[in-house]
Image (cartoon, rainbow, N blue to C red):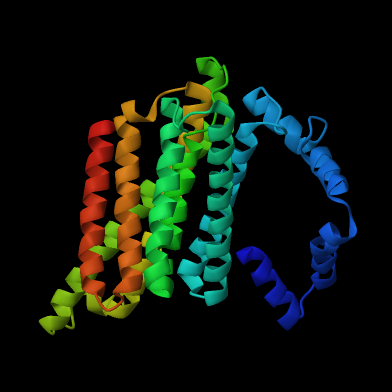
Length: 329
């Protein structure tokens, strides 16, 4: 419903390329019988389609007429919501926050449908195996979030990117395991994406640490009026510029850590079949992700506390570097 209202408002008030095509697609349920639309969905996601074949090759089972289709759908909606809200963190356009929040709601509705169908079919409480725990935690998190949004409304919606990010990681841990030996598990794309984004995250964290140190050296020299110092005479950069740069880098770290954890979660649950509660490294990465998520979103609620954010950046970088030194991860 929120997505439908939002799209209707765009079509009614705006003119853009592809508007007529969008109108046609949205009008299809009025023009075609539900059976026809269902047939097209079966064609798109069936075992003869690219999407269906990709799913079968990955999970060794059909996408249609399966519970896992709903899990995949909720994962996709949460990931799309996260991407939209990440862009919002950079440009602060209200329309992106609305789209991201609406997509977040679709992911939540998909979770409700999945849990409801499973409860009815199995005639028992939803959680039957340990692999269901992350999915249920994501559902509880969304329920609590919407409860508080109902009272605090727009102000709390700023946390949408944080909630969608955590839920994306949790639901990725729920994906079904497929048989794969160690050679296959180390050759798949998710393992390599995890390594790539982890490396990018570490590089950004070290960079933010250096920039934050420069901030305090520059502030010291400005207070002492030491105009001949290296940081004043050579860098020619203001404290405000450094503050804004650190804020942007922290957002990039938050995004990169999320992508690393999503890839890691898919790899662990699908290829390795390792229980997430037994992985201290996974917990460590989730802890660092939560730290930077809090850091980024505190910047949204308290934009005037720039110096505190710089200090928190140094602390986060030190924790991350120490974790890498001791765990090699």
